[in-house]
Amino acid sequence: MRFLLDTNHISFLQRKSGIEHEILIRRIRNYSPDDFAFSIISFHEQIIGAHTYIIRSQNSENLYKGYRLLQQIINSFSEARILDFEKDAIAIFQQLKNQKIGVSTMDLRIASISLSRNLILLTRNQKDFTKIPNLIIEDWTQIT
Image 1 (cartoon, one colour):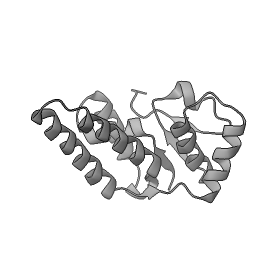
Image 2 (cartoon, helix red, strand yellow):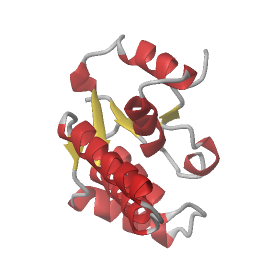
Image 3 (cartoon, one colour):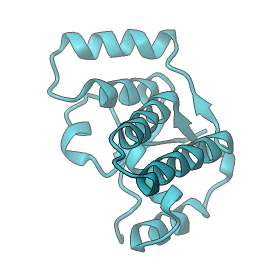
C-alpha cells in the first residue's frame, strides 16, 4: 500500500464524471489496486454529509436523493480497503493536536492515519495538509 485517498479524491471517484475524475483515474491505472486505501475517517465524513442531507430534506425527491447518496457511499467503501484509526494513528493525532496546528479535527485524523502508515495522502486540500509536518501529499486531480 502506498497511497491514502482523502475524502475529496474519493468523491471524484464516486461521481464518475468530470475532468478531475478522468485525470485521477488515468493516474490510478498506473498502479495496482493494492496500492490504495480509504480511511474510516473519510467514511465518517461522507456519512455525516449524507445524514445531514437526509435530515434537511424538504421533499420526497430530496429524501430519495439523500438515501441514494448513502447507498453510493456504502457501495464505494465496501469495494475499498479501509484503514482504521488505530493506536499508532491516535498517538500521532494527539501529538498533532497538542501542536495546535490550524487544521480541522477530521483532516488531522486522516493525516495521522497516513503518517502512521507512511502513506502518501492524495488530496486537493493543499492549504491545510501542507501545515502538517512530515506529511507527503499529492493532488492527482490536476493536469501535470
